[in-house]
Image 1 (cartoon, rainbow, N blue to C red):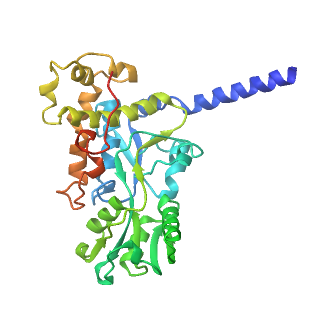
Image 2: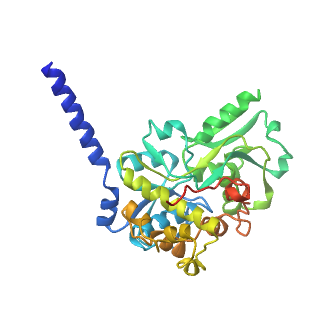
Image 3: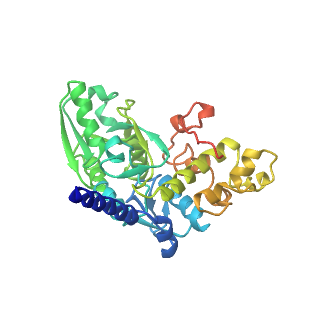
Length: 339
């Protein structure tokens, strides 16, 4: 009996110690003076540095939005470029505070990998890109093809499932580095490049020697909801990241942009007054400044602004909103209420 009590007590202590080790990310970030954010090493439109080391992209903007929520300064963030294999150890170990790197939400990642996923920032799906000279019009014509794919991704698993389900054969060229995967495809080592459609668009626009030589086939073979992630065990930090993303979505629904946000501060709409912090409560609930939502919108913008400047129709990626439209316009982007 005594040994059982001691064992239970020891287990409780261990659980508390583990929770303590994982908790306090907000305090850690504040004491350090900046957010450490894990991003893609180079995916145009989502996360890539220019020749001067300046990072841009949709995922990068959400790192900056969290930095604004905490510090009211979009420059208080440092970026850690991560491969697909490096990303999960980096967030698990605490090397980064936030993983914002075109990562698909899955059950096993949400459980055994130990991640908590924030709201989806980009609804995507896996596709295929080929050189136009092959004359291929459909993925159903790829029997016997050689396919370049990055290892350690859902892409690799979906690829096998798709060809098996359609009774087709293929030869995979599996490579760890995304840059090397792209290089192999453009060098002609494989007939097909497969990844998320947004990634194919970014690669075609930013990497292809002649973008118009390549076509993305019409089939989308999977669901790839891409979302930032944090470690299990720190609910406050998870809440901050989650409600930072919700701010950008709700702002667009309200019609609030980085250019007109000041016009809404004294709105007669009580929902907007709570949202922007004119009526206090929302910021305090997160351990943040009451004006955190106002600050995010003013310095980073709403979801539509973030989408349009990074991946939208007027960018080299030329992506339409589609599923990433607001729920009021037939899309899936939907924020929980700020109450």
